[in-house]
Length: 326
Image 1 (cartoon, helix red, strand yellow):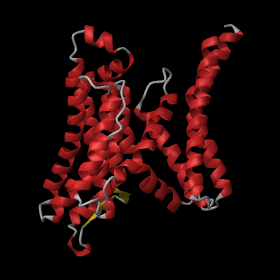
Image 2 (cartoon, rainbow, N blue to C red; image 1 turned 180 degrees about the vertical axis):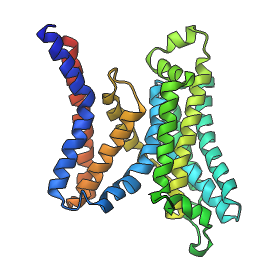
Image 3 (cartoon, one colour; image 1 turned 180 degrees about the horizontal axis):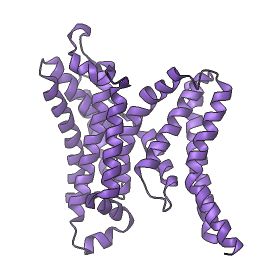
Image 4 (spheres, rainbow, N blue to C red; image 1 turned 135 degrees about the vertical axis):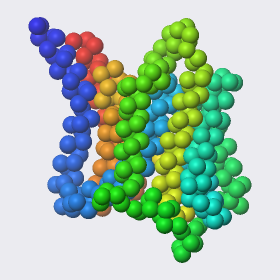
């Protein structure tokens, strides 16, 4: 085996595991800078408060990116789900019905995208950008200019509160929900025909089209499923804070995009994948928490997050270029 081959394989391995190394390095820095970083309470806070919701939204984004597109309306699906959930509970409807309505709201956002993309032929970027703007305006109209919808403190059903604050065997329910979402989507990508077709669409859509597979139908299902997954985040968010705040879901958008593309560095082919996205979310969550513990204000936290995303992606690109020339 030649030296260039050995070097190429070493660089390839370093590129793939660079995300794990980044996690270790960042955690080590914050554990040294902030004594409370590695405490059990803070680690639980990272998982429950920073990781859970962003992970779910990022997995929805991963689906869209894997299919060769992007979904700028995942925050809109979060918001519509939250509004439907709060509205039905506030109207005295059963929590089970409110849950179903929330998931349906997310599916409708995805279906609207699907119509624009698959039936009309609008690009995913423009279609979901339009949905983002329309969704923001609709929320303003539904709430008389963007007023939050509060649930009365004494009128919140136990089942509603359990989703955001309950535990099962000592494990917070939101963590169990995100674990299920991660497991199901990972299996879908690796073990099902639909998952393999989605990945194929993102790589070579023409091959999928000529193979006789309904490309438009597969893309439509992908965006509807992304809307449903994002709706789960809306449900957890609402049950945690017991209030609907218009356009609050858009706060997850940029980090979800960042986590998804950071996650591509975990794939040998540079493709979106669930494991990489989860690691990307964990990295962003640790950075956000660590910078807060070190006392930096919000603006510097954004600088740190953006710099980290750039550094990880640049490192991966440089290594892939080196592998290609080795």
